[in-house]
Each structure stands twice: as C-alpha cells, then as structure tokens.
Length: 266
Image 1: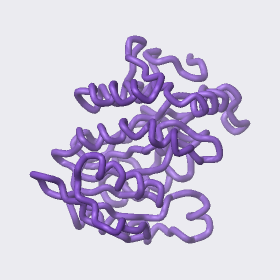
Image 2 (image 1 turned 60 degrees about the horizontal axis):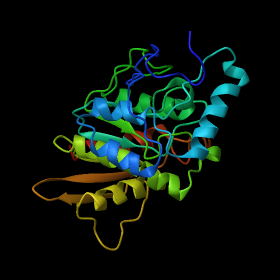
Image 3 (image 1 turned 180 degrees about the vertical axis):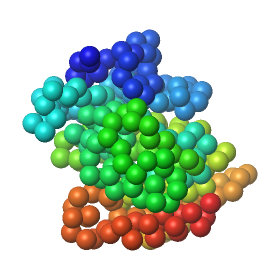
C-alpha cells in the first residue's frame, strides 16, 4: 500500500502530515517553521517532512529503499521522526536519533528495535504506557504523562549525526520543549548526547543552567530554573542501546530506578 519512503498524507498510521504540510529545506526554514508551529500537532507534521540536512535525507531514504533482509516486503517510513506521546507530559524522555531500521522503518520514535523494547517496557512497568511491547505505528500504544523525542529527527549513518546536523535540527526540539512548558517537570536524558542537547536547549530558552556545566552520569540530576515558573529537573540515564543492555552496563532495575528518580520530581 505504501512506497518507501512513505509520501505524506497517504494513510500511514499516525502520519501527522499532509501533502500540503510546509517543508523545511535549509536551516533558516527550520527556524521559521518551528517557531511558527502553533501546537504540537502542527510541529509534528512539519518535523515529519523536513529535508534540511542533505546527508541525512540521502541516508534515511537509501535505507528505506534497500531495507534489511529481516524486514523484506515491509515498507519503510524513511522520513524524520517527530516527538510522540502525551501533549501535556510532565516527563520528556530524550533520546539521540532514530534507528535506521527502527523508527526510520516504523515512523514512530523508539519503535521497532531493541532500544524501544527496553524503554517502552520500563514505561509500562512504571504505569505510564498502555502496552509493554511496541511493533509499529498504530499498534494501540499510548503514553500518559510522558512524551518521547530525539534531538536529531533523522536516522544518521553509524548513529552519529554531524554537529551541523545537530544544530540545524535543534529548533524543532526547542519548540517542542516550549510547547510542553506548562506541564513539563522532568527531562529524562538517555545518554550523554541527550544530556548535552537538553542543557543546550535550556540555555537557548533562557533557563538557568548551573556553572560549571553539569556532567552526565547514570542517576545524575540537576534543576534547571525557569523564569516565572517551576524549574525542570534533568535526570540522566545510560542509553537503552544494545551496547549497554547486552553488556549489563544498563539493567532493567537500573532503568526502573532512574525513572523512579524522575517520578520523584513530578
């Protein structure tokens, strides 16, 4: 039913965009279109059709066209992955970037790979996810009080975005945190990249970041003060990558304990 990559507005489950959604093609248009998004739904739509980083566009679409043998016959989303979850979230789970054969295939953040299996299972154990497992967009999963987003919205080669790609994508993340501000209480950073991205976003938005810069660590936490409203806690957790979960650097009890620390700041 679908081509790979999936054209917007063709009926893919949870596709927020239409054929008329404006497309960012360079960094200035990312800044303009992100700032002009009136709500999270409009932001998700604009993120999902972004073409501002040529290397990432080429990579994500090549992966979508060639696929992986295990997913032969399945269409690939092959577009940027917007944030997903509760629009009045108190907890924002921050990742790195979509996986080439995970979110880039399914069209939903942390869906379709082992990392997603870990984080969604943990959210389910905490009582914030409707289902313990996730497979694809439109599978009935939902989150209560929680939203998930990656600072880089396209799958990068070797899971390593370039600094210019990180910076070009940053306004999408900034606008997402701004739209969540009325309810946001905790950012849960999966790994050092997410930790640094959260601190950078906080500085750009005028929040108070302690000096010297707080260092990432599993279980690390810091309060980011916001003018005129309650602060936001940043809590660190090792990333749910296979490199960490297969080696035992991150275990289920460790992940659950880190989420419990986050819940303590709700």
